[in-house]
Image 1 (spheres, helix red, strand yellow):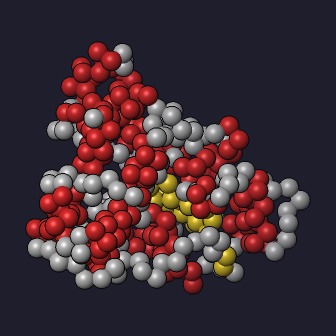
Image 2 (cartoon, helix red, strand yellow):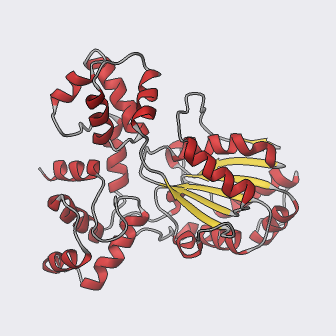
Length: 338
C-alpha cells in the first residue's frame, strides 16, 4: 500500500547521488528506525525525501508520505492524534478505537512501513531557541522518543529546517546506530548547471558558473529562482547578471521570502549572535564571541546554548570553533541592517 499525500513531483530531480546512496544504506542495510534530513529553507529536503521513498518503496509493505508544512497544507499541522489515526487507518485498514503510540508501534513491528514526515519544523515554536514544541504539539516529541527507542522493523524519515532535540540526543554513527541525521548542504557546480539546463541554454565562463553557485551556497531553490531571473532579465547571460551586483548575491523573488521565513524563527539571543557573526565576516572562536557578547547582556554560558540552537537550525557553516555563518546569510543579514 502506498499513499503519497501532497508529495511533490520529482520528475526534474537533479543530483544528490551520494546522499541517496548513503540514505539507502542506512535503511536497507543498517536498519535505521529514524532518519532526519535537516537543512536551510530551499536546500532540497522535501524533494530528496520523495525520491528516497520512491527508490525504497519496493522494500516496504506500506509507504506513506505526509507533510506538516503549513504552506503545503494550507492550514495548521494536524494534531498528533489526527496523524496517528491517518497512519493507522492506512496501515491496518481500519480505524483504531483510540489512536495512541502503543497501537502505532504494534503495527510498525508487524508491518514493514516507511513513513515520511515532511516539514517537521512546523510543530516548533518561533522566536525561541530551536526545538521547543508548540503547546498543542508536545506529543510529537514523544512520537520521536518512542519511534527511536522501541524495537521495530519500520523506518520514519523526517525533513526539517531544525534538528529535533530528541534526534540530537539519540543519534549515533556506525552500522548499529538506529537514529541518524543528515545535514543537507548545497549542490555542486555540475548539479547547478543541470538545474539551469531545465530552463534552457545559458552562457557563462567556468568562473562565472563557479561564482554563481558559491554566491547562492548551491541552494537549489535559490538557483532555480536565479535561473528564472537570468532568463527573463539578462537573456540567459550569466556574466551580465553577475555584473549587476558584483561579488554579492541578489535577494529576488522566492529567495528573499525563504530567507525571511528562516530567520524570522530566531529568538532575540540568536538574532544578536547572528548579527555579531555577520558583522565580523571571519570565523570567530567561542572565547571571542563570549567576550564580544557580554557587552550586549548575553551571559557567557548562554552563548554556547545559542550556538547549539543555531547549529540545529543549519545556520552555522561550521559546528566547531571557530564559527562562521553561511556566506549568503552573512550578506542577507548585513543587507537587512543597512
